Length: 483
Image (tube, rainbow, N blue to C red; front, side, top):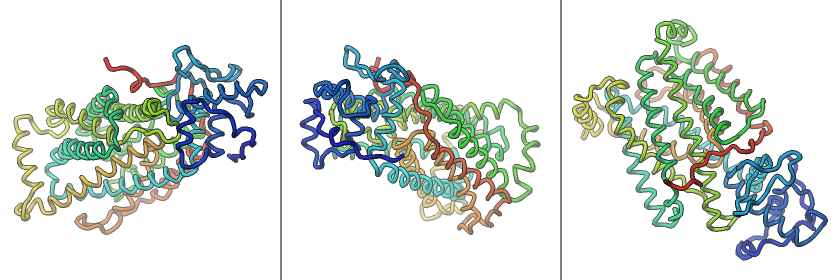
């Protein structure tokens, strides 16, 4: 979209008194893009609304300023105007700003106001994809010494991250990167995130234990379907036909890649029917249902970032520089609650997901710890520990941080779409002569086709014109008061 410079008559509009001091503190003047955001938020195409009254212009500028701030923070409330509905923005008696269908356009303008946003987003996405591939490869390497102890490795990452994230959060708080306002945000959304992820993990492991391994990567693609449905339901987001076709192509591309990888004898494309017929139908259904829980958690994270941006900026009244929620606040509190619920569900996870009876769990943890530490390489079967598991933990930690940063800068669906690129890249990585992994896997005949379909789907989604946000769609979490 071509952005034309604004007429000079637009720029000298008076700003509300509470914003004038902050504008003077800026090291650079207000740019045309910023002025465009403030003046276009109320749908006016000229500098002077309603008959050219300068005083009315000041009031409209104030309303546009607050609307732009609310949209930039992701606060979308129903009840506004829309087609034939007047301004599309109205102020209630209490000072709240309600945005209708026009909120989607303001939200998009808030993103476009920074030309470097797309470059930053692309760099974060590329970093997340690279770390995602490294995470998958290093997990395979970490299981070489810990092959009998995958449950131990899973719990090591779950509870270890709480300690690591907490240290990082405390450090950033001491440097005033994380402010008291951020730490004082309601904890209910984080508790819900932890609960959903723990339940999804438990249900997924229970189902996976009764399913052929080849089915798991195929059925995992339902995660994106859940995200699309939940973001539409709870965030009021609407997707154009081109975006939906793009998501469908992405899913099909991933399925083609994973079903044509590996040697022909183990290819899912030649044994899918047999696998499905030999598996009770309730387990694939449970596995697909389990993906709804982490998908819902990702939607809550997106909502938390959006709502907290409004709340934090509302306190500073700085629409240009206002601080946004630090990702380590979300990571730390979310991981802490997840670890709590995992601990409560540990008997189910160990017995149903990993076939480890609760009575044998203490001995299993001791043996897994001894294999992980493996000081002086004393245990031959655990050769490569602790270096390989620690490399995986570091890569997985960096991957989770980059994924949350990508979600914060874009959306849960965009982050999920970007992660689909890790599937063909990981398959490609395992065709290389990697150390300790033996003979490289052959590249399936449908790999190129699947990868191309996936890339076409990503392009179709990202080049589509957004369908906008429906009025009334909002997931109220941060703005609600704690009980």
